[in-house]
Image: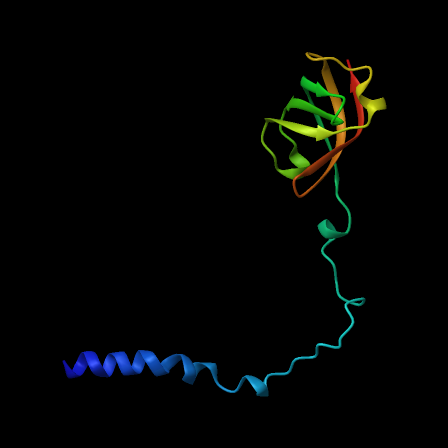
Length: 118
């Protein structure tokens, strides 16, 4: 019983001992972020190339679903996914078209920059 009590007391006060004096830590909150290094992927989305087959076109939403092959630049496997596109890019395409296209991808947004059907 004494062992359990000693263990419980030790566990209760241990976090306070490890926290130490937080006021002794230096925090410079007035530093401007202008000179901070930015990861190249954060600065601009990389343009990637792929080939695939048009599965669906939604002119109202400005999207096209393409079943594409692997995208080595982004280390993506083959998959079917939606891309944002302009009405001009979509107007001469139809479901089933084989296409080659370039796009940017940042987060969950993939945007076609150029697209050509065979």
